[in-house]
Length: 83
Image (cartoon, rainbow, N blue to C red; front, top):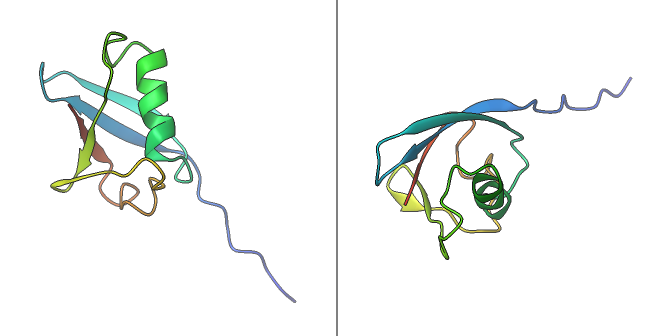
């Protein structure tokens, strides 16, 4: 009998604003991309709407827009820094 791999469920992600030090926790899907997370931060008012660019870093490197949160290692260490 063949069993499908279990789907990864949403997880809590801590987003730290580098300019203010404020932290926010969001429920996100591991299959979401960095670009989708940036858009959500803007739409939820966590990133200032006047921002033209939102940068996300994890473990000392910038996340690429097309990179999934799971591929970036955020499932294991669920914290990003927003600048």
